[in-house]
Image (cartoon, rainbow over all chains, first blue to last red; front, side):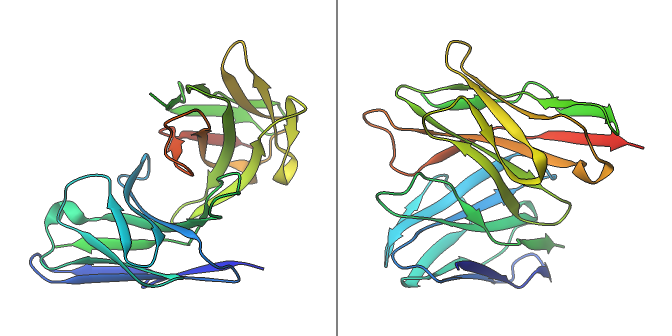
Length: 114
Length: 117
């Protein structure tokens, strides 16, 4: 069966520090990968998605970047965190091409920037 | 443009009563529709989906949803609510029309369901 792992689960970082959140998927190949941010426990904002190694699409301009160094690894990064980067970050995957499109989410990473 | 609306931020029901969480959508082609549930500080869990076929879809934890093409709705229902159903519920749609971003899901803003004893 497929599983998705995110870490760290919680993170408290000072303003201006770097960030790296990691996500890995097991039990599937060539997945579509996604990073979402959820602010104030409500709506989901799609940040990045990837259809393959090294292929990253950004949905909104921001202080963050994403990379996909391996087929089942997706990393969210920042060089200098802002207060507004605080939030709950969710990684997700979906079956590429012939899938029906449902997403399968990780357990999330809560980032607090002080 | 694709979109999903969840008109109620909050739904409150008593345990044992039926519950409905509303969702309407807008797509250019045929929709694929999904419901997710999120418990506090957790990721979203997939509940059910409608792709084609029977308009009434059954999912996890006793939930079901009814697809209504004429009303462009996909309301989530449960005949008898439990306190443990209290959570945040998200409706999502995937557009299969021409020009849609393959695999992209559009989420509603979420509805907080509270079931009191």
